[in-house]
Length: 131
Image (cartoon, rainbow, N blue to C red):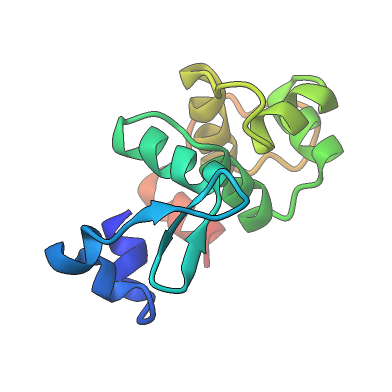
């Protein structure tokens, strides 16, 4: 969370204790506000998940976006249903550790066919895949 705040200039003041202490529940929504910046409940939940060491729906969505995956292609890549991908992406279900490890493994190997790779790439092969 801190890195998000530090890299977003309008939000950086939230890191100051005096400003941080001015947080309040957003009017008419389940989110929170500091000065004129509102954070939805789903964002706050995601940040809490990440700080607790869990995988958030935002991390899962970023993985899909980074790899150009739709619900269907992500489901195929992970060997799960399209519905479960949707649940994970929208925070309706917690993302199991095994699923996140599968995401990272898929990204590391980038299989191009339906068959799975038999080994992980070497550091040099991995670097070549991610240029």
